[in-house]
Length: 100
Image (cartoon, rainbow, N blue to C red; front, side):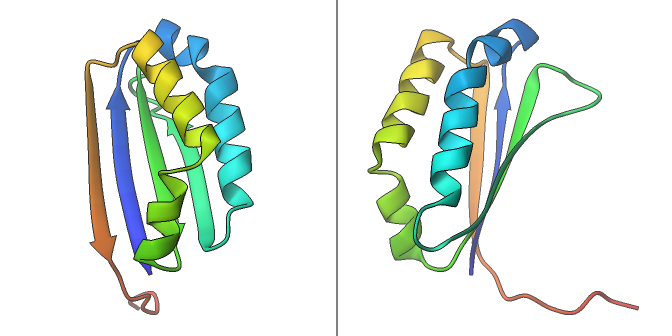
């Protein structure tokens, strides 16, 4: 499983301006083959920061995601509302049982 943990540091106004693009990419991505989870959330303590949590069946599925029209639309929305920073980390993960 491929796990992506991303964070966009922006402003509440810019995030609000990107809301339609965020809703579009989140919905469309969940219908992609190999997508197991794709969630945007705004940090409670910093309304200008968005976290993106992704889970993919394979690297190939994630690579295909980067070539989709909804990804291009999202990137255009980000370009129109430039973030202060973007960080994305990619992990090859194995699911384990919750430690007790």
